[in-house]
Amino acid sequence: MPENDGGQSSSKPSASLALWAEDNDIPVEDLARAYHLPLNATKLPTTTPEADADLGLAPESGTKTEVGKYIALDCEMVGVGEGDRESSALARVSIVNFHGHCVLDCFVKPKERVTDWRTWVSGVSPKDMVNAITFEEAQQKASELLNGRILVGHAIKNDLECLLIGHPRRDIRDTSRHPAFRKYSNGRTPALKKLANEILGIEIQGGSHSSIEDARACMLLYRRFKDDFERENQIRFPSHTKKSGGKKKRNKK
Image 1 (cartoon, rainbow, N blue to C red):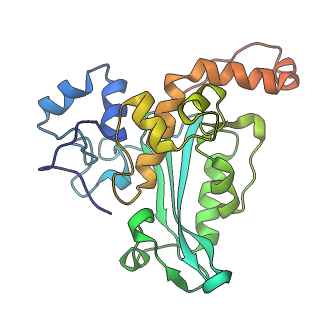
Image 2 (cartoon, rainbow, N blue to C red):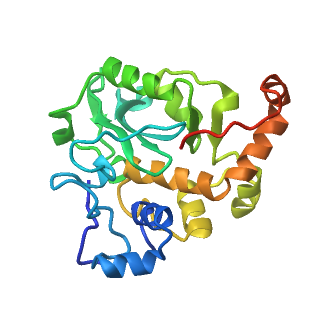
């Protein structure tokens, strides 16, 4: 996975830097300047010495990252099978919490022989399989984290299908289906890269994808328009609102 941790600068910040700045109520440019970081940095000084963008913004040593009620999921796929029978298989799954902190990031061993690593877009290569876990292990870890939580993602149906996991529709916040975002693609389903660029002013998917960066971009979009997402959800699932008495509970983020 290519790192943007120095040297080459970008005119737009990364999702990691943007989330970090927003959480601390600091202009992203000032934060980058204070830590001598390029705007496209994904390796941040809040990480542990061996950590990088794919491990998330790690908490202080000896502490555990709290998951909270809201999580964002993104998966990377590789090609398996030959010719017309080629299909996609899960190769990486990443989940971040409301603050963009990584709560799960693992490479997954496809059950079938990989015929196309799609490294240029997936960011996954053969060397990543050295410490990869089985599909069943990844599925269990993801399922446990999703249970009872609000799930944020972009075209999240695809990620759930590749994990063979279901999730209540009322608990899904899909940035690809949010009505207000359709104007950025002439009424069609908008690409996450375009939303990140047009709405957030951040740069993602400049080269190969990082599922951590994509998940953080989704969470940042949700955070910026959280009230709109929730109003839309109440309209779509009014019975769920009535059952809860129509009262909003203060949820821990």
